[in-house]
Image (cartoon, rainbow, N blue to C red):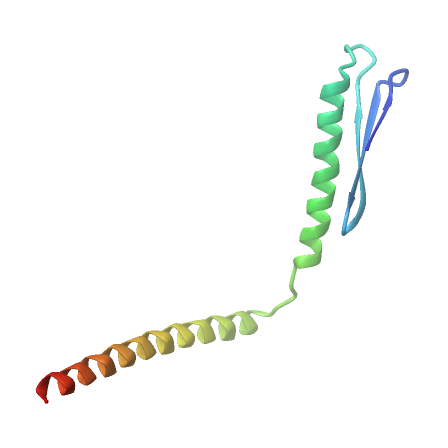
Length: 103
């Protein structure tokens, strides 16, 4: 939603999201020519910026370096196990084919 006050050369954008309501304000210097469309775009960008910064603040984790190291080690172990699993599956398939062809 946009609210335009041409007397004050101001545009307010109110952005409603699942994270809440965010307002962006655009004010034109009285010495400049007031452009409603430019004001709307600037106000919208400022509202979106506030929303994105708020969402980012919710995503920040307070993890210690030791937690991050353990997570990365687990990830490497998982990748190693997945590769070994694939190699075993391929090897089993090959052996089964060799046995079938030898009969």
